[in-house]
Length: 133
Image (cartoon, rainbow, N blue to C red; front, side, top):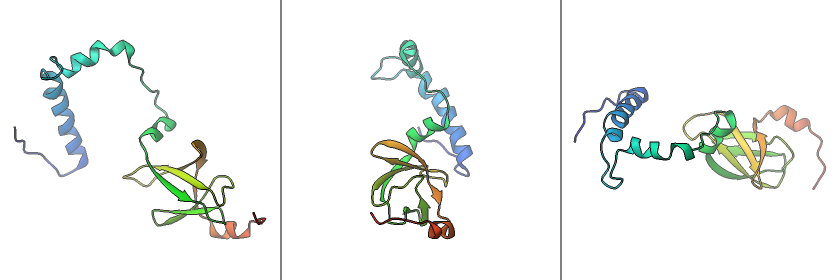
């Protein structure tokens, strides 16, 4: 079925998508399932564990990137310099971030959550005393 979609905004597209899922997709018997998808969901509802809403669960859906931390404890990402939350000079780090929005850049190192990166404060960073490693 061909639909005339209103593509004027993401909100409009999301509304149309929700209407399609609720009105068409979930209420039509699926050829593979042999039942409506909403009914199949209900069959296993007692086994489904929902995540509690929190800032941390949002990170599960973030995109990832890898960076090398420079000698001044900074790294570049999306055309901007950031400082790591702890001293990670010379180490590889993994970043988690929202793909389509500027927001927090979360630092992981060796699979462990480290914290949020801060945009570089060049003056403060330049005043730090460092020992050679």
